[in-house]
Length: 74
Image 1 (cartoon, helix red, strand yellow):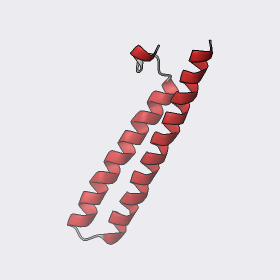
Image 2 (cartoon, rainbow, N blue to C red):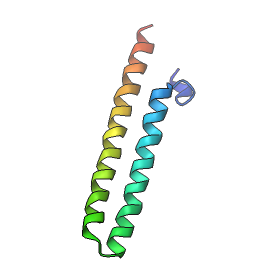
Image 3 (cartoon, rainbow, N blue to C red):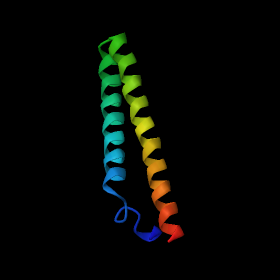
């Protein structure tokens, strides 16, 4: 089971991972745009977007950890 990590992952986990990566990427782009245009509010907003992406990433790790534990008990 552990050798095929992505193949055995649930749809919920995959959705969380891709959402987290997307939010982090959007946050980085907003940071670059905000800092190059000297838009302080946009740069600050980007930090919240990155933070939300990191929170989703942690939630995804918890979901996957629970799935692995359930699989090992069987």
